[in-house]
Length: 503
Image 1: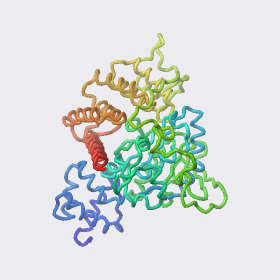
Image 2: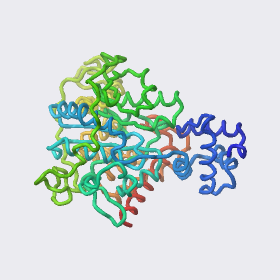
Image 3: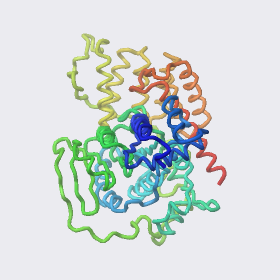
Image 4: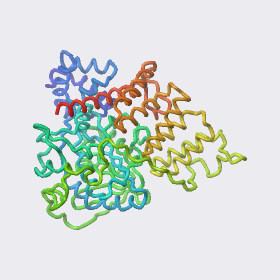
């Protein structure tokens, strides 16, 4: 296949893909790249793979083109219970410790499936968490699943799967957590409500970030994703993923990707079944071996086996296994009074106080920096305290109200978050990131009509911006990139709705 495309063009295009999308195609993968581009050329209306490559490099990389390229150049191979050994470590060691610790610290848990493909891993995590937390309804669980492939995300949001996704699961698993829809099986609504699917480019988009809720994660799974990146880019992605973890948080990659993690400030834990990584600043770089010889793996984990006698079937109870009813808003959280927060780097506690006790306006940016710092570490009470000081110091600055909304959203205080965003827009009607945030909040609340309205407002404002213009409060996000994210988010939701409707 490569004889139709020159090595020079393949070199240029593989470098382009690495820089713009994060996909890596070294020379030994050029035949696969040429085959993928031959198929993509048909969908893009190009005459041949070579001309398609040239056109893509010379034109803006639109959402549609990213969608087509991702669908043809990535495999997206996934299924339920993939890599049982790492799931066994998760179930038997990591999650019990996390759940016990978080039970005494606000009953909050944040999990990220990075590179979720069509969603099987994310729903596997949802099922596992629902079984391991008996009082689940009393917890705030944020289960984020992101990918670069909008088509795969649309399927994930729809929650419909065929036989191939269940090729390593018992029939009882489908009966327990899915309902039959002709020739497909649909994830039961309470489980579907647990997962937030979002479009994110690990190579290009900002994270950790309050904006896309990729901060302060307790657990990140990024399995069979890094193989698409060059080693340099993979290490950069891993560095940012490590920064997205709270102290004591866990990172899991696939066994073939562990060689890329050695340079990170993480502790390596070698279980007999798998290798995992923990963020521990005091012992970074250490390697610990835990447990004896690995026991023969069970065919299926206990939570996938038939029901115990008398246990209600998930689809037969009104509020199954403690889940909130589908579509219900999570209860608003009353934020406790924050203790005196420690200072962020470059700001001593008390530095910002003016003679009358009010923060000095000259230090407002430092107050906001403190808020972001503590939010990234998962201390939302301290983050909100610092943010309130910034708001009090400069009430007419919409940026501080936007930051406050992001922190409130993390606390699931959705009503107050909406109010803060509306205040930001009252102060600046053209605040694009606030319109975008309101759209995401509406999606979280299940109000698709309101989400569409807010996203349309954002798109209308973005149309007047230069594509490469960095957006205020966008953490480096450009107008062109946000436009692609908004369009992809809207298309993904419509695809998921259509998939469900057809079933």
